[in-house]
Structure formats: structure tokens, C-alpha cells
Length: 51
Image (cartoon, rainbow, N blue to C red; front, side, top):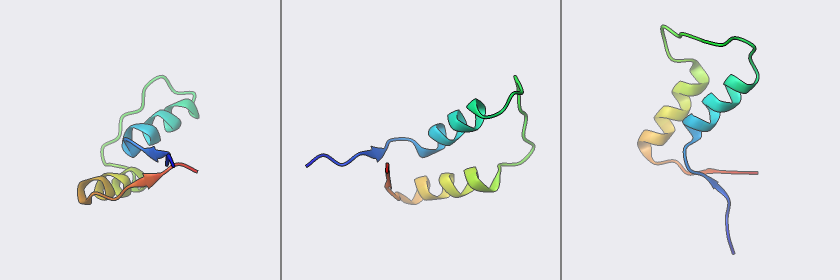
């Protein structure tokens, strides 16, 4: 059985965020809460499964 899982949830979130905004450039002075959660999960080794 093959299980689809996310290889890099942070990159995926950033790509989706960029695709849904019309701005050509976004500069954050602090990490967004959603991305911060994904970074923390990545650091502790949480596996993200695709649905």
C-alpha cells in the first residue's frame, strides 16, 4: 500500500499562499502563525499526510 504524504509542508503552504494572492512580492517581518506551526512540526518530525 502506498501512502501519500507531504514531503515539505512548509514549501507546499508557501506555494499555495503565493498562488492565492495577487501580490508579486510579499515580505513578512515575522513568520505567519500557520507557517510557524508547520515549521515547528517539521522540526519535531511530524509526518503530514495528503488527503
